[in-house]
Length: 506
Image (cartoon, rainbow, N blue to C red; front, side):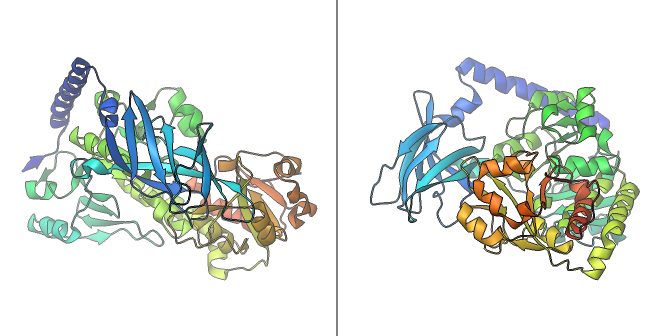
């Protein structure tokens, strides 16, 4: 039998600290850091991309080479139409004219997203397109660094039954499809798609070893959490469990949630490093019992593996995969169960539902067309794909999202960039336009919008003073989705008030 108790945690922490010190000493004696070791030689690294229309892409994996301490990445396109790229302010010319466009560019690391600009000659006139390259797993050592979160739910259920735990109920979910919670008396079995399975048990409970091998066992109440996911912070705070978060993967200056910012200011939450470079020593010294990551951690499988080797279960919240916007909000029920705030989470969710129940039941059609966008540094228009959760909120509120030529939201990316001419064709006659300041930077006047492109002056919404800007905190505050939809509905119906997440621009 496996005993979940405080003594075991203390012993485990001491052993892990010794392990970390040994590793650090070993690296110091060899004169290299672990990051330098990873970068040595030539390796293949998986990538994903954001930006563009999706018609052309850089082939994955990418060859990354270290020469005299400097890293280069060889980028090979699926197209022959790119003549130059810009990365880190340096222009690189195509190395393979007539063939697949190829560029060897200098990079700082394979941890942080890399923003690049590529010039294509595929259209009538050359134009630059912005892309973001997200580095993933080192394909040269997949077997060694892969992270397996798969569990057979049927095997877990059988093990529970064999151990004498009978199923007593299931958490009622109306919209969320990314997780389930089954009750076995005092035990909660949590299964998260694309993440893993967790068994939440009373402190000191006896758990059969064969069952503990199948799931990550969490002792309730879950305390001292290392929280990387910004959207999770808002929901945890909304159900009154902020005191369970002691470590943050986001710096104080980057929070738009007042309670999180204040907690870091007064020291009740400490910065413990970003997702790709956590402060393992601080995390261990703090007695961390759980790390809640977002899906970006899948680009750093070695970090996930290391955390769990050090005895810290990793939970990847995948709310961004939810098709319905209220599915994202309903993840508050998961945090209510994890942090013993179940009734508070249920109450909050029901209050939000009451706020927009008329919209859900009556399915209003205001007849208003709404565009949601921002302008990139290179003057491209970044829009949400049709079917994305933002466009669905516009539709639930009674509006019609434009432009209609914004692609299919079922793809891997939720946004795409388009030329101003294409955006103008699809959105210039929109009744309402909303500038997305969470990504594009906040603007404070219509004049600032026109400064980004004079063609905005001809937009119907500009002429009729129906231009709005989102607050910077919109995407961090998942708990406000219902309020945002009510804002949208009131804007579409001409209700003039102080909105929660929208500002009218003059």
